[in-house]
Length: 299
Image 1: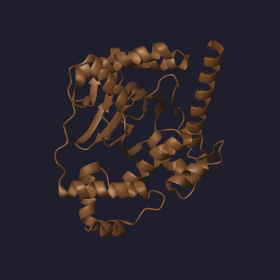
Image 2: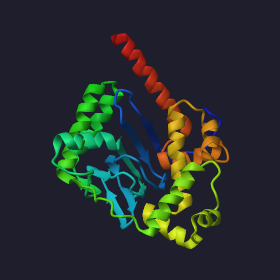
Image 3: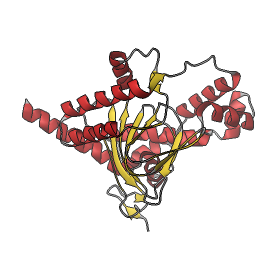
Image 4: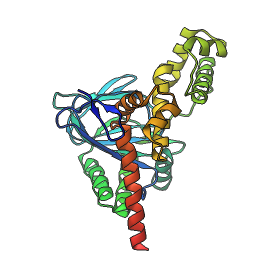
């Protein structure tokens, strides 16, 4: 049975003992946080514009990448670089619980410059590593942020990123000169970004770009790890997040990014982000109010 959230959108019922909090502390720019336990929930193929650093605290997480599935259990750290398409789901019947940090590309680049000799764009050369000490530090970032101690959270965060870069970091491969297929895929992506609310069909898009539908599908999947319609859903959710963070009501955000209605936004947003859009927006607003109150009290 579907439930109705506080913004009037239908939400799929959580499995027993499933819970999630996805939020941002205004005193920690460039960082999002997620703590969650999932059993039935699975994340469809998607990518992030920043990094993913997650500490599994119980159960098993199964992460689907281009070259196969990797599994992470308690004490393991999952490291995913920007724009790497992946899925995630439970790797055991009891599901999995984790604490995740989403540092921006700019934040990680700054830490890399200060603490490593890596040249070019710093990233992680492996997806899963057994690092129980780092897992405890990631949990510490969450505890400090939840307690309102941005100084401690920021200090711990920088230590986590620096330690993982030293142990598992490397320069990400530089981009080679794009092939004709990659150029076609990039042009298709630009069209979809520009016309997100009213995108062309695959046949129309291929015709505009002077290619065939199957050739476009192959080129786009090779470039971005997913077909155009999957990429577009992910892009719509990313843009909806920005609108929600700015205070836009979910119903308005849904229309602005091209979803048919709010329930469609709710379904896709919850699958990709892990929490419903209404809850996401409320956490942002609550964090901003709390930070403002604390700041006024301290001044």
